[in-house]
Image (cartoon, rainbow, N blue to C red):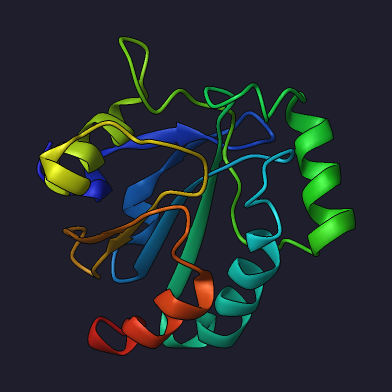
Length: 159
C-alpha cells in the first residue's frame, strides 16, 4: 500500500467504499466522536467542506470509540446525530479503531506516513486530522486542538 487510494472502508450504511474513488481530491481524514469536547468541530468541518468541495476537498469522518468511550452509538445513531446537530453532508464511515492491534489498515498507514508529536505514531484523541494531497500522499497531521478554521488557512497549498 503506497497511497491512501489503495485502501477501502465501510460507509455508515455498511457499503464497501474504495478510497480510489477520491483520487484527484484533497482529503481531510478525521477520527470523530459524538460525545467529545471537540465534537463541535463537526460544525467547522462541515463549513470547510461546503466552502471547498467545488475546489476538490473531501472531508472523510471515521467514528472511533477508543478515547473515553465517546462514540458509543451504532451507525444509525451516529448518522442521525451528525445530520441533526451539525448538518454533516461529508462522507462518514463505519466506526473504526485507530490505535492498537485492531486499528483499521488505513489508520495504520496514516500514522506511519505522518507521525505525531515527538515522533509518536499513536493517535492521542478524537479529531486528529490527516491532510492528503490529490495523489493520495499524506502531507500533514493536525492534532485535536487544531481547528478546522486553522486547517482551512493551510489548504491553499494543496487545493
